[in-house]
Length: 397
Image 1 (cartoon, rainbow, N blue to C red):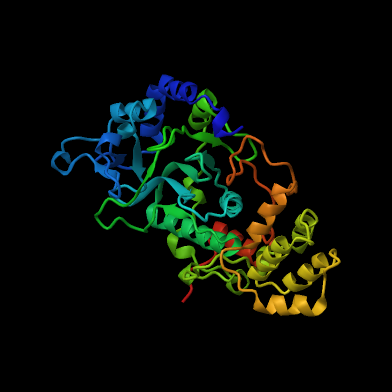
Image 2 (cartoon, one colour; image 1 turned 45 degrees about the vertical axis):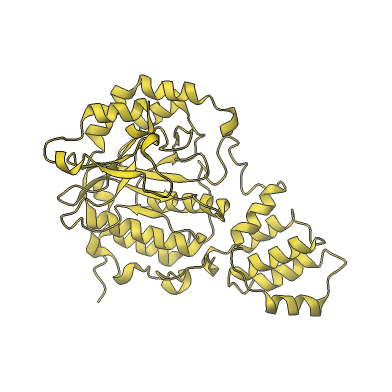
């Protein structure tokens, strides 16, 4: 199912019909602070190039007006984009009732398959700590939010440390670094950051689609039920902030090659699965020069020693194969915007299906099911997770 076949009026009506119930649920389970919340300007007040977001209420009314069930009701009714709101990720005392990742698909040049892999990666990393997620198709264009709610308020610094660690390993493995909510260990007396609630989009003709891992997208009334039935995770599952190794690296950091300054997406040896690549290559035409070149760039972008022999093995399917020309081209290849995810995407466009068939109702860029990704069974990473959950790691000196 795609956006062109959706009945958005019916979906909006379903959210509006349960707006009171949804507002009560959010107020009871998710709201961290009521003195401020996030909002958007109505369309008639937006100006080209100007910011459309705002912190509510206006400064003059702060301390006199609080986030109410009526404000939440209007959000879920979604009569106007000016009614759409978001919640701050931490309270004034630096406690959090939810955590989230934001996978941004705005702008051009976004590798939607890489976003899909990143959503899966973070979902599985959270599951390793016993944390379940709500997956939100947040904009209908490939972007996603992953939400975790807790059965009791969590220390914001501890939640930030956990989410930052997962975001760093996600970047190393997929080339995508999601935004985290909260974005800092403490608000330091400020308000911190906020994330838009599920429901109507602030600009696009889109209502959130929701899913739990392993299920199909739900829309309209089913999406409302998915949100209301979203189970809480244990606050005790979040390791304390001082349990993490210094600089948020994992024990096997050399293998994962985590770098806070890496600007070009990379795929490391731990996330490189030669069998999976070989399977995908079976769907690509080695006779086509453009495809041949892109495959070489994708394999070289991994930095893995297996990239070169895999490219040669696949290239030999073509009568044009030449050892010397192949070696010269490999030496000259400089990957920039092409990653191993680009190879997987092109193979999928030609019929390749990784592991199991993709849910036809899921938009490009987001998957509502989890599947094994290479590197997840790394024993050093598993050791870190187990140690953190046991509380046996202290801050490294």
